[in-house]
Image 1 (cartoon, one colour):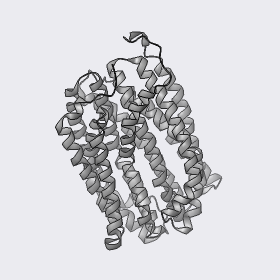
Image 2 (cartoon, rainbow, N blue to C red):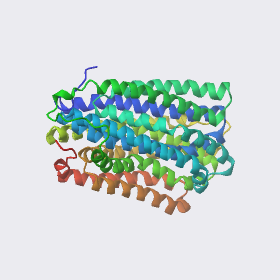
Image 3 (tube, one colour):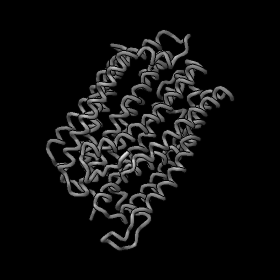
Amino acid sequence: MKKYNMITDQPGKSLFFFALPMILGNLFQQFYTTVDSIIVGQFVGEDALAAVGASYSLTTVFIMIAIGGGIGASVITSQYLGAGIYRKMKTSVSTALISFLVLSLVLAVIGLVGNRMILTGLNTPENILSDAVLYLKIYFLGLPFLFMYNILSSIFNALGNSRTPLYLLIFSSLLNIVMDLVMVRVFHLGVAGVAIATVIAQGLSAVISFCLLLRLIKTFAEETDADTGKRKLYDFSMLGNMIKVAIPSMVQQSIVSIGMLLVQSVVNGFGSSVLAGYTAGMRIESICIVPMIATGNAVSTFTAQNLGAGAPERVRKGYLAGVKMVAAFAVLICLVLTVFHGPIINAFLEEGSDAAAFATGNDYLTFIAFFFICIGMKAVTDGVLRGAGDVVVFTLANLINLGIRVSFAFGFAGIIGVEAVWFAVPMGWSTNFVISFIRYLSGKWSQKKLIKV
């Protein structure tokens, strides 16, 4: 496959071929988490699936924090790359890796100490609490590896290399699936086996990814820079600029997961069978939003590189190309879920599972199938604002999105049932898009620049 340059090649083609490996890679990442659920649901049981589901929203929040942090770092790195200042680009990479390694260690300790308290606070059913706590303990032990793996992937993308993360995700996914089966079917470790498999697979991928990044960084010759000063290992001013983008990006990337986490107590209140069905539905939703989020992240990198190169008009062309891409994905997803929602949900649940589990999963998928265009438009528009470093309106829009999802779910679950949890989803996505789109139309984002040339 030809490698396209996002600064010089045709915007639509360069964006598509850059986004494609990101989409495929994230699909593989979601694929093996889905296989986790299928293996647990089929070979361990409905309660085990519910236990993994109770943990899933919390674990995804931490991964999305890592991805958001990586995007913050990638915007700075991409702008230096676009400007051709390789010395400072390398400093931004090392600054990001050191900072987020420290953050991951802090989060791991918090998770290990507070996981039972969090699960109890979320009203996790008593019959699955022990398994959920066990899953989280193992997960948090491996959090630094999982965290750094996602940061490293974002840096590869910032450098215009979206293929290496794809290859590593394929490797990690296949290894994870094999280890899932070994841990659950051979060693009969149940929920713990699934967690162990995930940590080992992504941990190994993180180490390989780091080694490959070191080799890639060496290919950028500092001698071409106009600035011939000594390269720093760590730069606090760069960290400050990364944080300006990283915090809103963490919020944006985490909106879906934080929303799931905050409304988890609503779903938990309907019992473990409903939770199992909802877990199956969430897994499918997580797969379906992958092309939308990945396209938005690709637009973010495209925007950062082209603004760094002083070409805002190319950003507008890239935005239109991104809109066409997510629209095509939304139509395809809607058709697939409308036709095959039944067999998809059945794959997650053993034959003797409660009817409420099947009904919940099917109801969720048949409703949400028609609304993925909303998150697609939101992701692409947010991508432009994030890549430009225009974060104030972007952050506000995502917080309003979160507020709508949580308030509607809590306010109406007692009136219309668990359906209130998923009715709130497209309401939040759509409002987020409208606010961000108004900002995009203003053109003020094109005047932003985070780096000093």
